[in-house]
Image (spheres, rainbow, N blue to C red):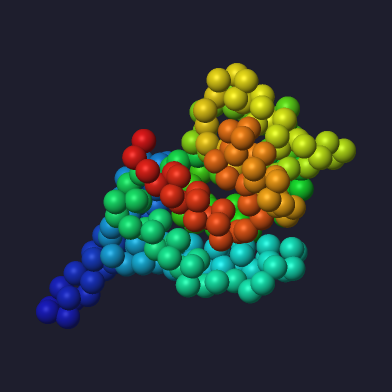
Length: 211
């Protein structure tokens, strides 16, 4: 009789944990959850984000021929994202990523989604302006050249600022000469970089602030 009661109790506990986990997952997917401070869940999400971010950084490094990935710096950025005070502001924030070669950023977008961010992808300036016209975003990431237009990133930024849209704007491109950074800042961008770790770090710092 005791063994049966013990078994029933174990089944009830298992069902309770399963249901609880499902509800947390549903709330997180719907951006209704405002905290991931539950120990095991928080740890699992952080480790998944770290793995995804490392894969994205290595992928980008292989394409650009840059030096090795600074894992300590990458881990610090991910850990900041899961700091309870940061997480409450970070969950569900939205990013519009504009790039005519979306496959180049697939792993990076996956990493940002593991940081509980909502990332929407478009491939042209026109699509970006149309999407921004129908929805508010917390950040725009854009490549520089698209097709024959080698200044497409600047053109999108100028269109947004001309329309009075102050959304934070990051330019992420393999070509990141000093003069590009200077021009991007003068045009109203908050970042111009070809460094994946800098991109992730600045996304966390910018979107992790109080709304």
